[in-house]
Length: 439
Image (cartoon, rainbow, N blue to C red; front, side):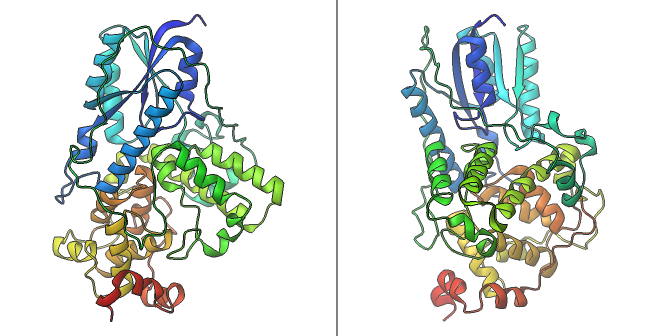
């Protein structure tokens, strides 16, 4: 293929240089690559039906750190990251005209708001006779390698696993590109917006949190290297993954995976290297299943589209008598329920933007099954507060809790009293987050 003069690479939830297909292909197919990131005001500053911003302070700060690192990494390579703020379909379109680009390359998104944006950009480009080319990078598997079309993706995880685990190859992650060519044009340089400009005040690090999450590819790869390193934290995964606290209770890679600072294929490659060095064990096998769950949820999001956001969910029909009770919801959100363990979990979430996997199971089950509050209120709050918010994982999980998920056999009701005895028998976690409130 003959190289074109310039390609604009639109970064979205793929904030890395390693295993970035859109970036790698743009370098192969053009003389100059113009990377751009647009701070989407609607996504970041839009308001939910329940009065809080779609994106809270924790994830916004993590995003700013990730973009700052990406920009510096590209500068080290001899180019820059163009920063814009506004509507991506308009800002990317303007940049294409400014630099006289031949194409836009981007990694594809599949959920409602993201699809509307990319479709609008595509129409704008058509008016100039230009195209946007989409690439992949969110999943372990390439959809074209799967033995079924997306519309026929198995609804149950067990069936999905049987059809792919032994028969579908996971591709090697692409290496970080090296062949960057300095620009021969001037492009307007905009400063990174501040947290305050995006509607938030900076939160001080809560020392009770297990880990300080710092955005960016380097921090992601560092955490991966530590967890898969010589101290062999991974070996305890199967026994510790449901613990409510602990720096190494689980990998804690989810924030970087959610924003694409870390490729799931890179995690898998490192997992296989770990097994080659130390041998496969129950923990490494269980960890792999967690990566498979991410793909399964994303396929459910692709298969069912907007249904995952609707009251009837994937099943199209509500199965529980739930209400949008704002008073009960606010009690839950602020850690003021009748159950100390739930309050402790919600206060950790409110003060750090993070909650363990078990903690999320507990608070979601309690909201829906014990308080009778509609699952969509919980899903929307998680969208706002979670530092590791992933659209498909979040909404499909809440579909399941609400009884409207893809697997009709799955029920997420948890007896909170029994769970407290099992996972916080000494009250250490509750005491940590409630302190004098419990005494």
